[in-house]
View 1 (cartoon, rainbow, N blue to C red):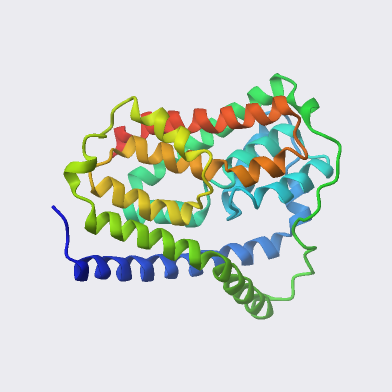
View 2 (cartoon, rainbow, N blue to C red):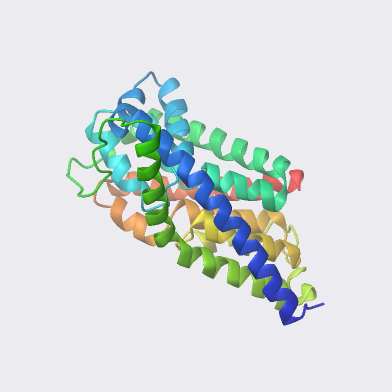
Length: 294
């Protein structure tokens, strides 16, 4: 059963307004928090033992709304600042997959139970994988080269009112970079939601074979979570199982060809392969576990 174009346009408009408002509010709050704490202090705070360092990396990754490519300059800064390798590894895995915007979108689109399950799967996976990387001695696979880019130096905190003006400016700047992929994602989602017959896709269901296939398709793509989730929700409503959809979202959001190209400048081949294998593992694991909470 397909929907009429007026119904599809209404779905597109309502979803776009909801997600844009959500994006702006949460980005504003996150920018304020980051400016109050400071980037350099965040890097220093990441120091710790083999267990607390990845936990801190997870936390920093979860509060920084970066895409897969945006994590690389921050990761490089952490490594150059002498942060523990396990903490930097956990940050690399978590940052594009978990942030307040993505979690809020999952809660709005699929419910808080799914949001909580998704967060637990990603966080636990990142912690375990970071410890495995550390145990395998993959820190020796980091190239000692300088990578340009990174976050600008944070100035001193000027007070809530002036900092709010700065946060508004940064929110607008971020929105300018994000609104096109967000609109495209919502548009594709609306078309799938309105035009694709449910019978065409429902055969995928939650078939086990579809999960690794979806993860494999997702990894080469460059998908932001904010754009991927509306598409995923439309696929789910059209009959595709939660498992394959989340496998594709995690694979596409957690890694991308541009990110891998950037990482090849600082990672030797063994570590680069470990990164890709880790993202695939998280995508497949998430695709198999998350349907239990649908």
